Image (tube, rainbow, N blue to C red):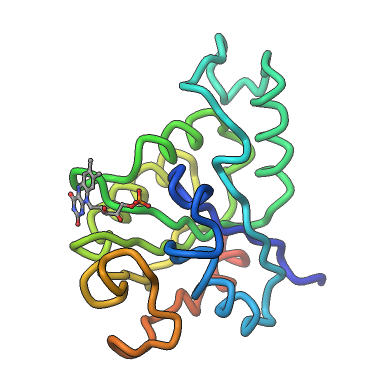
Length: 185
Ligand SMILES: Cc1cc2nc3c(=O)[nH]c(=O)nc-3n(C[C@H](O)[C@H](O)[C@H](O)COP(=O)(O)O)c2cc1C
């Protein structure tokens, strides 16, 4: 069986705009990806899809998409077996950008697996819990272990991710991520 194809989903425009600098996806998470051999990881830059606020006339579960941006997004998400969502915490939830992007699709997510990496002052914990509820609606199996990054402890000046782990030890990775692929199939 070939290794599952997985993606990491940066959730906000800041991730796109600052690729290679401050945010966790382009720096420390790239290192994590390189260390993992049990899945084939790809980075999905949500911002590059330039999704507007949900503008499909028919609910996503029907899979009858009208707009080119939705079809492009659908093709990208459908190509993966699982996902690691990278989410900031906004007002005790995930970002509006990520929730909007999730809502564009349905069947592309279903019966797959998801893990989570959160960041914020409270390590993104509530944003991840928010996403777990959303995943339940989409019939996505979620991995219990999660990574929480603190803006205070893991980012120098609240902006530059500490890739060398100098502020604290390496955060727990969603090591059981590939487990749930089997559970979901
Ligand atoms: C509108 C807004 C709401 C926020 N709410 C929370 C919050 O409820 N809990 C928290 O820990 N951090 C909160 N933060 C801090 C963000 O998690 C933090 O600024 C993070 O870096 C945002 O990620 P981004 O810059 O990649 O969008 C909030 C930030 C903003 C802009």
